[in-house]
Image 1 (cartoon, rainbow, N blue to C red):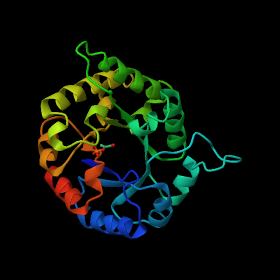
Image 2 (cartoon, rainbow, N blue to C red; image 1 turned 30 degrees about the vertical axis):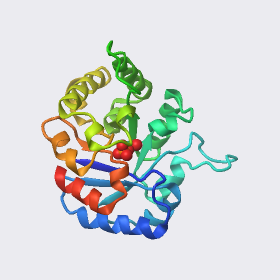
Image 3 (cartoon, protein in one colour; image 1 turned 120 degrees about the vertical axis):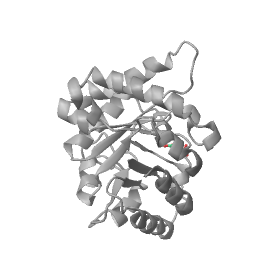
Image 4 (spheres, helix red, strand yellow; image 1 turned 90 degrees about the horizontal axis):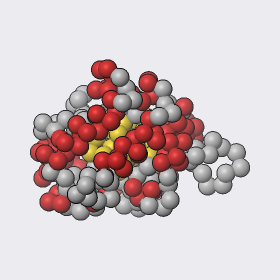
Length: 247
Ligand code: PEP
């Protein structure tokens, strides 16, 4: 299981950031559970350099810029140089600020070119009875996968994050049976880009109100490869319980 803790901007002190890292390191003892901490960018400079632990670090975004006269931008090369190995890209909270599929695609290519594994967020705002949301998902995946090589496609992680399920409670998250259906659908779409068995190599994770109380059910028999928890990743007791529930 791949567990990517999206701290968003919830963590506002380096002391708290260090506590969360220490707690995650204590949890990262199982070879089959990979813990990735998506800390706000300033903390990455503090936490990622020299990291030799089993915990990895992710950026919550990166720039379309490759450097130079680009005030305030944080490039993929800069992050990679710090020891950051993953980046969450196309999160709905960034898409809400105007990030398009084209921009996400460009960021994914910068990430891959700098040995950063992209975690691409896709997901519908709402579920319509005509299932048009499936078309939305297909388009989001197509925009990112089309320009990539087969190898790059297999390296990319897809985070299915239905927007209607984000920032709620476990009771309002997706159900295990709906999640199974969505994983099947996403793998089918991925199959259009990765022929043969390679498609099973793409990791698909789920985010949207994953809490200790629903994590095990969402992990069992749904075909999911991991989770991207937001609010429950910044409370060390909740995060510990969540990780223990799925491994
Ligand atoms: C997220 O925004 O990536 C997320 C999954 O948040 P939460 O777990 O709080 O719903």
